[in-house]
Image (cartoon, rainbow, N blue to C red; front, top):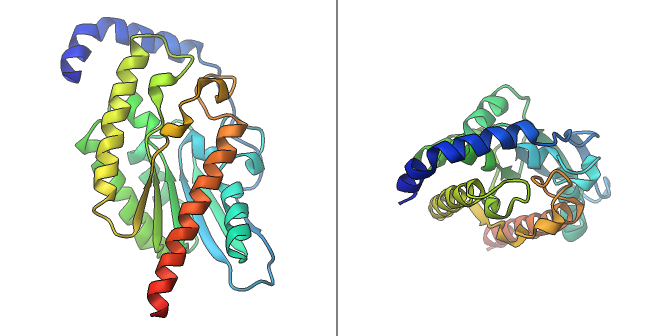
Length: 246
């Protein structure tokens, strides 16, 4: 049915999409370092975290990386585990999952225990739907694990695009439906990977908490996101360690 609605609403969706892109407020990526060490450096061997993604991973919507995703995840994980955490961020605004693979392949990736992937919005806007999206995601995940040796992969779901304040109807509805479809496909694929943890983002469907561009996460959403990612990563690492100690 989504294809039928796309055909029926095609001219209007195309016009609204062009207007939205033309009028969108373009915020910069968060300033600050894209790698570092959090926690007590003398508290043992550091955990290693790699965050890969698009503008949300890059911190668009806040001013500095300490307000964004990667660095706060490392800080929270260090506090939860009592170990230092070495983190690295590889992200770029506007990329879809296939382009993230190209970016990762061209980057100097450090070894990692945990990989965090935050992608999906640009796949929806570029109409990379369903199997194509999951195929790109699988290729990216396999590449990152092979390059870094990660034991845990945190797969963030596709954000709730049906509530984006700056996108008019019916384009908002249509993008939301595409996002739901990709999110469901991503969750189903993640369940086939024992080392992967799917993290839904539907809790972020609160327009009043978006950045002032009406499109990206605001400071409160980033803070909550970092807490949830760090908690899931710590639980996964703890479970793996418990199995290893048996």
